[in-house]
Length: 217
Image (cartoon, rainbow, N blue to C red):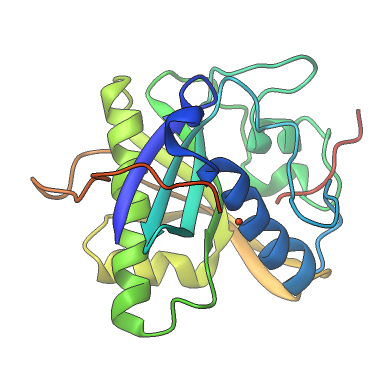
């Protein structure tokens, strides 16, 4: 497995990786969890997939097997900012405005969303490696821009998984139950300090081959 990072400006360097990531998101968040978010028969894509976003994906044998999206909390695009701030401002369905408790606009803080790992990554060791590569890529993107913290709205189980991998993840605010998928979520925060000296990076470009809630505005 290897990590690639990119923005919309240079996603073409990685073949169909971005589109394949959108397909992986559709299969997990829409087909498996039943989220009511923008999608077609192949991909899921929302208002936060815009030029302010960056991406950290994991490739195995030429296929996208995991990934996540990240953007600064200073971002804005049209009527939207970033997901958690839009939720606090009441712009999103199914995410309570109280989830974060305050309106954060801070160049030191970046938000991570749409973290997903393919179900075909089956063993605990492989899933841990995939998660580690995704998160280290997110840390690189944020740290290179001068940020010091990451946050995300995530299932509570992710905090335990991150801590087992050596990240200093902690819960911020109170969890809530998403009645649509039956899972409990909370805002997590962690340092954007680099955890280790070496992170495998892609040595080739893949050749063409594959919350949260919808907006009120």
